[in-house]
Figure (tube, one colour):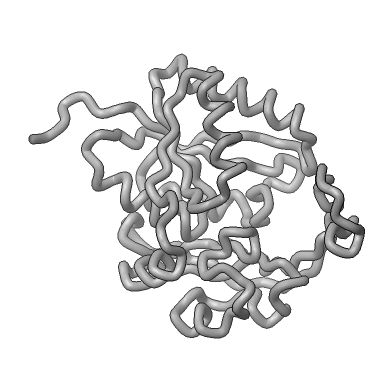
Length: 244
């Protein structure tokens, strides 16, 4: 029986594979009405936070999906206090518009899930994690077999070499990953931009640009690890994508 009163739901959209697969699952669930997408944007660069994808390409995805986009506009490297304040204000704004549930594509990062649940509870939202604790090897092959197409736009340089950046995410890519890298990159090993698949009306056109290396200050850790296991900086390779 069709649910005549589905929950008005905001979907946290990154533009990558986990988001795409989670959205694919949610759009088939009659209990929820996905009435908005929410994306974190580095307002200094007009790119997606962490992934570095240009906002124009995210907008092209959104146009292909057909669900309105809201942005969480952040400075280039916000501290947690600043991030939480901006997030809280956005959630309050969405609550006033009738949203009651929020979806994330997280798979097994328990600390992140607990953080999201705490922040959403404060704002009066119910969290939804459609991919939670699914096998990541099965998930990534399910993603590919469903007809999604993605390009790898960011990798951690201490785990993957430059050659992985800019590759298409296919079965060969998964086969080539080192044993210490999660098949879905769930520990932040790599990030993707999805340019085709069953949630889109048509493929997103882009031109592959240069691959660049960037270093960032590593987040502080509260444990007693030595500097050898807790470096002061983290390096990433980024493949720039240009709207076509």
